[in-house]
Amino acid sequence: MSILSCPVCHTPLQKQPKSYQCENNHHFDIAKQGYINLLQSNKKRSLDPGDNKNMITARRQFLAQGYYEPISNVLNEILGCKNPELSLKILEVGSGDGYYINRLKEKNHECYGVDISKHAAKIAATKYKNITFVVASAVELPFINHSVDVLISLFSPFYEDSANKVLAKHGLIIQAVPLTHHLFELRQILYKEVNINPAPKNLLTQKEYFNLEETKVLNHSIHLSDQACIQELFRMTPHYWKTSPERQHELSLLQELDLTLEIEFRIYSHANMKS
Image (tube, rainbow, N blue to C red; front, side, top):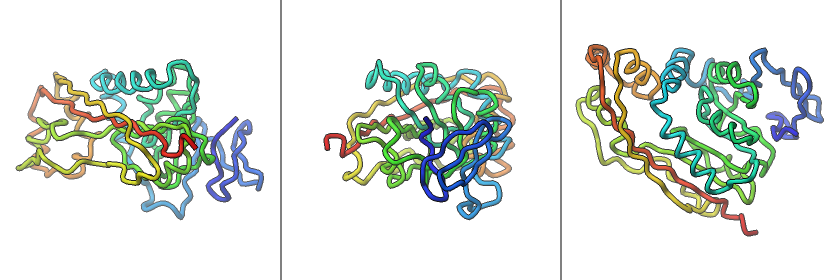
């Protein structure tokens, strides 16, 4: 049974052969690639929100080479320790090309990926047919109230009100955020000055919703051995939009690059899990 909800009237959506439909007869077609678009036009901030096709393609090509597999491994280990035997309803917010959620699906969980980019949903759904990919905003997640067992956010914007609405009372949030030395070597090339002591990012502040149960830090080094890999990584990061042409040219001259991965995983429980 689907846990998706109608973005118009917020009643449950039932899957039909070629669409989803709610009890009020709102229909949403399933695209030929397999994803469903639940992002209403009046909720868009641009004509084509989210990462574009080139960024998503770069992400897929980079992740396929295994450089970020240690991140995925930590995520899988955390989830395995928390719920080793259960089959869970898992939602990844900002799922991109589907790399991380697919590796969780290997454990036979019921998995959903949400991204505001239709290009991300299209590419992900084309490759991973056993996962439900949805075009939607993280601000208003189109899921039935308290239906999600685990909500995952890896390097993505996080909206606590929306997460609280869809998270089950026993639910968990697994959040991954970059720390000060993450991709530090890349940032040294792209910017004149690099701040190594920024304020903590994306801390969940609404304690009436969530309890911080545990943190885990991943420190890892990777070696990019050619310019293609360097450019793929660059194009999949927010730095792609911020870097001057001069610095982009400097990056284009490199044929190899050693990089630091420094990521904090935060595990939150629902504050109402005992109620």
